[in-house]
Length: 412
View 1: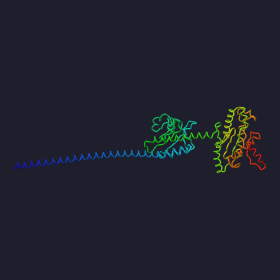
View 2 (view 1 turned 90 degrees about the horizontal axis):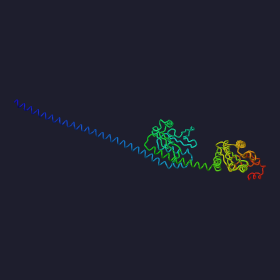
View 3 (view 1 turned 90 degrees about the vertical axis):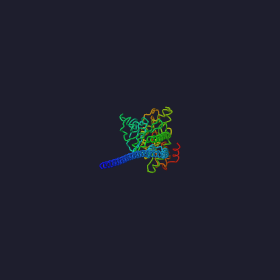
View 4 (view 1 turned 45 degrees about the vertical axis):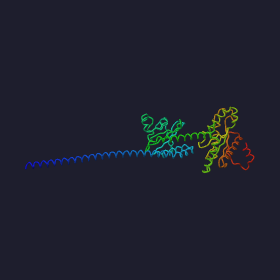
């Protein structure tokens, strides 16, 4: 009986053992599967996050490319209008404004500065609407280095190469880039721009293209300006010529009519100039004309127009000046010339070089500048007839004067 119980206990024990074993094995497999599932889920999550980051990177690159394309498209769309505008003007200020507008339309920056090279003193001068003039020497600051090396300077490159070399880097610390404006080997100026809010990598290329456009426009302006200056300038004396006189006369007359102001005109010539030429030679005659022209410049306001009208004959057009004040000016000029120690002055019939002239005023003496010139010329011949070295102010004719006398003066 006891043996039976022992056998039954053994069987039950073995059964329990097997049951526990299989249960443990099942639980172990379940936990292993759960762990494998967790690991696989973590792998999936990692892959998803990695792909998300890659997608975000690609989206960022696409956004940059879209911005890049937008800038190039904007640049290409704007080019015809800008070029047309640049070709339509000879004014430097309008060219610079067009360039600045183009830059600010394409690049997100709040600072755009333009410096132009002044060949007279070889300094870069900032184009500004303020009265304060800002200058840079070639090689000074980032702007000056860009001009000196004829290469685009970025802030990073400039600080790396010149940050501790005393090049005046603090002058342009507000600039992110300085771009030289040039045409072939000729430096014309420099464009400076501040920081870009969202740089996408094409800023240097765009600025180089804009600087090239500005270079062509400024060179055309310079060449056309020089050609215009030559067309309006007397080559011997450097004074204005007839062409410029009548061009400016139209502007002055329109302003005089609007504002109710006069335009006075002083016409004079050198007394006995033929005698001076015949006695001393044409080279000395040319030097006399040049020296006398310089004297006229020194006593004449800058807004007046000084013209070599022909040969030894000159005209000074004085806008906004009454006939009486013009006469005072003319007398002062006549006296200065008579006292000036010109070469060979003592060989002249009067013992010195002198001028004779006439003064007339628009609109009181005539209805046009042509008429005023005619009346001043008549007064000039009266001065000649009265003994030279004098100025006569035109006076309206009296009824007692004969038409024959007027005709004689106009013919002579």
